[in-house]
Amino acid sequence: MILRIFKEKKSVMKIITLLIISLFLASCGATVTVDYDKNADFTIYNSYNFFPTIDSGLNQLDNARIIQITDSIMQQRGFVKNESPQLFINFYAREHITPSQSTLGFGVGSGGGNVGVGVSGGIPVGGNVLNQRLTFDFIDAKKDALIWQAVAEGEMKERATPQQKEAYYISVIEKILSQYPPKNKE
Image (cartoon, rainbow, N blue to C red; front, side, top):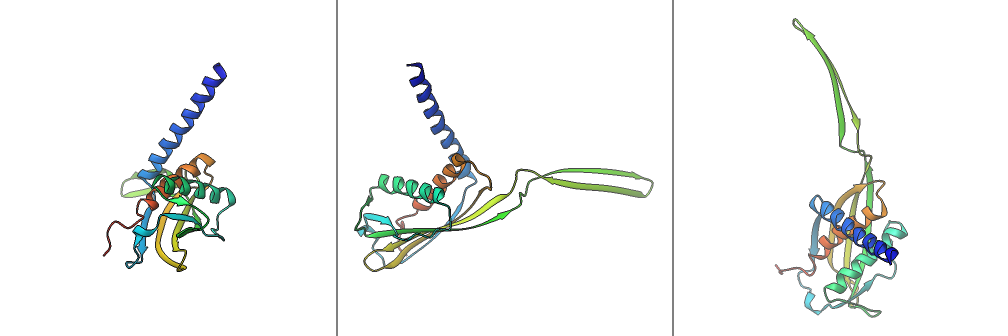
């Protein structure tokens, strides 16, 4: 009985931790730009599946995270995943690493009369940052034509934990899919 309560508390804590990390990442999260075929009738699409040959440039674990999160969000929004879909979803990422912009500074100075001498420096803090450009393509399965594309640009720690990666992808994919279908045609 005590073990069961402990496991339930642990599960609740994991969910709370993921939500907090998601909120933090969403607040400083990715920027998303969208492009779409203005002649497409987005109201006719209600089924999807993933493109048969996804070459995302990511590892298998990140691919699985993205697919699972996308499935969850699409199905919550009423889309059906099936073997004869109206839409194929493709995704791919381009990544590069940059040094942390955060530094701890220190300085030493001396002066007297009309002469001054100073020395200063900075120590990088926080590790490297992984900059990622994640692209989602929605392809009309019958026409084999791109009808909607979103590009999200964001960043996470280079050595992010699995929980941090999951929280990052949840926030980014929610932001991407919140813009599908387009709200108004121009």
